[in-house]
Image (cartoon, rainbow, N blue to C red; front, side, top):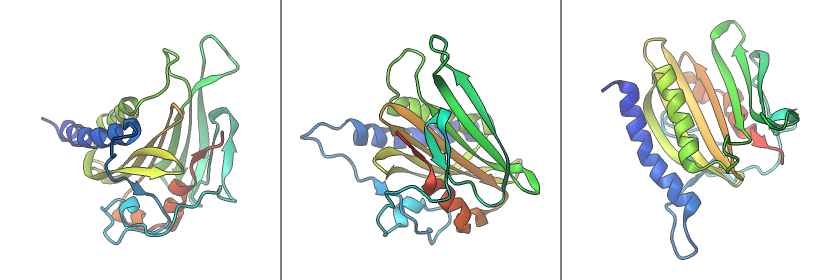
Length: 215
């Protein structure tokens, strides 16, 4: 079994918690889910959401930019350059988009970068589900051959999701991934750098805390 396959199996445990958190009935008690605030983790491999004591900021970052096709806003880190978008139109309604993504590179190191993906419409017309959210995280982990170091369910701005910190050993990269379910849509955010110092970078923390759907 490869490291990526092991990582996906570990992530499936978080899926069970995410499903319970999103689909619990009125008489069911969902497992505790951490709120993602603006405090850095003391241990870089402990999810930020688990160590944050401050309340979640419920308003948009003043320096965030809006991508109207993707219905989301984001504040790119100061070293983010050459941001490019990828738009997948709806097959039956060309005025709508099914998937919108934006990717920027780190200035001076094209091997590192930042991406936001928004899945707005599912192919069958149904709403996104916790299983679809986790399958998209798993696909990214498998594609990049990542090994999960730590992961946790997370709740932010009314969105339920998962945060995963991973390594890409052959490239010497560290990945920070967050994925959310929001009103039947999937929002996936990722950053990758060449060292654990990314967890101490306030620009990267602010990048993750700025991303949100605008409607």
